[in-house]
Image (cartoon, rainbow, N blue to C red; front, side, top):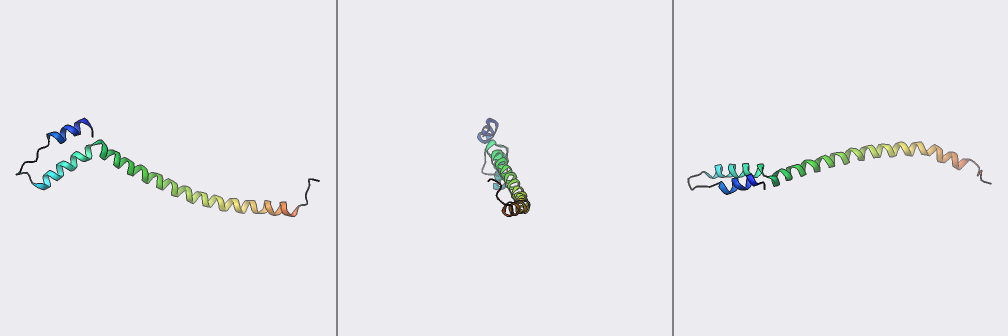
Length: 87
């Protein structure tokens, strides 16, 4: 909680005549402006970005592995069919 948010919490006074909904709105506004709230939101956004990136990499990796498998197949066949040149 930032110092300003802490002061705002301390200064907030819910009087008996204050509507419950108004109190909730004020508390929600204080929470959203706090550092912890912003950190939670940032972490959720970062997590989603990481998940999206990993999913994209997974698709690219599978496509690349398919390509490599097709490419190496002819090389392996050629090596198998050629006589041993070592000696």
